[in-house]
Amino acid sequence: MLVDKKFRKKERLCSRKTVGKLFESGKMLKRFPFKIIYSCDSYDQSPVKIAVSVPKKIHKRAVKRNFIRRRIKEAYRLNKRILYEAIEQKITLNIIVIYISSNIEGYAEIEKKFTGVLPVLLEHVKKDIDNCPGNSD
Image 1 (cartoon, rainbow, N blue to C red):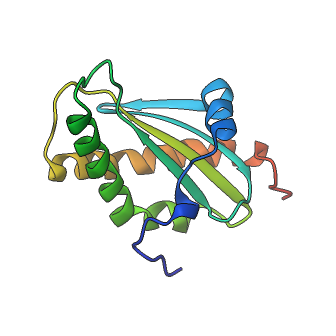
Image 2 (cartoon, rainbow, N blue to C red):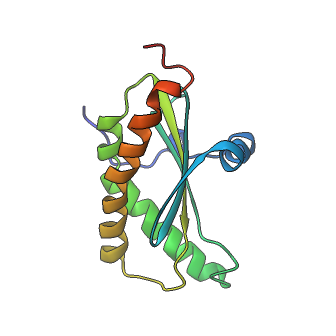
């Protein structure tokens, strides 16, 4: 499957309703420096929808939060093919990535840790894929 390396609007998790539902009933995975909340839903425009959050409680300055958020989004953009190839087109995987470290790490380190989390996330998702709405197999 050919996956473009752009981070389009349809891949962003924007709906407040979906984000709220994700925080209420989503499953959580912690791998330092990330806390990932995920759930699957019926197919909606893209196989994966993602949101990135850096807590204000940990990083007070908006400049730092935006800097970290950009690095995580770039790591996702370049490595999203891993998720796209593993997810079947029948569902949409909603993901919120929360950066929980108080240190600002370099891009190479963030990308290395993010790509290390993806196989673990996929392993958890594959266990839950039978219970997803929209998956009629």
